[in-house]
Amino acid sequence: MEKYTKLDYEKAAYEYYLHNELLEDTVKLLDQVFSSSEVYTMKERYVYQIATKEERKIYQSVMRVHGLQDYLTVMRTKNMSFEYAIKYLERRNIKVKQINVLLQKLDRYQQYIPEEYQYIETLAKKYNKETEKLQNQKELAMKIKEKEKMERIRKAVDFIEFYLSSANPIPVYDLHCEYTGIVQSEMTYNIAYLKRYEPELCARFEEFVAQENSKENIERLFQFINPIYKKAEQIVKEFEKEGETPDLIDYYENIKFPYPFLLKIMKRYYTKKENDILRSFHKQSIHSGRVTDSISDSIVINGVAFTSAEQYKILEWLQENNFPISYDIFRDKLLRVVKEKNKQKHL
Image 1 (spheres, one colour):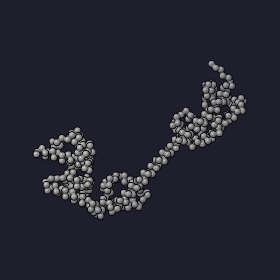
Image 2 (cartoon, rainbow, N blue to C red):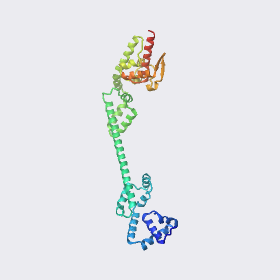
Image 3 (cartoon, rainbow, N blue to C red):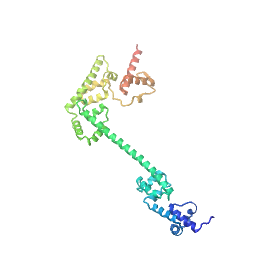
Image 4 (tube, rainbow, N blue to C red):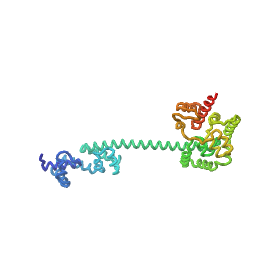
């Protein structure tokens, strides 16, 4: 086993304090053979009795480095991953600003601690880059949030201005939202947000909504709906003369206003007799499912079978002829095909 002199141990103690870590070879024996106080005593003896003038200068410089705020804490992260090192430092309230300040202070001492300086410099560069990236993400998120805020404000202003105008044919809030394809809950939220910026406009809107069932408003609604209903009524009467009833294909060939929506308005504001006339086009409940969910490998209606390909062909016909795509219209078209095929059988 290699023999070490007292001087070897004292110099090892000196080097240990310089680097604040155990070095190779003889230094590894320090924590196995000596207590921390003994290592400290050996270091002191070497520095003040044995070390050269240059070694003492180096020691004093390194000790000043060790005394710098945050230095020792930062150096404890040397063998950590970057991600864990950042978490470790931030838990101790050491962030990129403190590390950059420390690096500036270390600049004059880097010749004495080249490896340590290089580590802190690399750490600072990575941290600066990560901070810049997070800042850019934060700024982008703020821009997106600001853009979304302005979009909500714009939508609310546009909605209210049209809703309050004389050009609005349906001055009933929930019906107006449905007619224009607007989600009522979202618009209500947008208008509540707009209150901070346009309180007077929002107050006018709220006042109007509070009186939306006034005689004047309902008359305006009737002016818009009555011609649509009258056209539907005329179609029904023409079919009755032939002893038949129309279907939704007949309705949409002549009227572009959504049948379920018209039915909803009629049910709310018109008589039972008028509702019954409108229901001549479709006596069943409105089906809310998707057409494609109803298509199967084969279906049979009144003795007529339809393959999957034939069903899709009917769906394609509806699309080509600009019919709304709903199960009820799809079903009515199937029934028409069934009626035509059964008629041909009896010829």
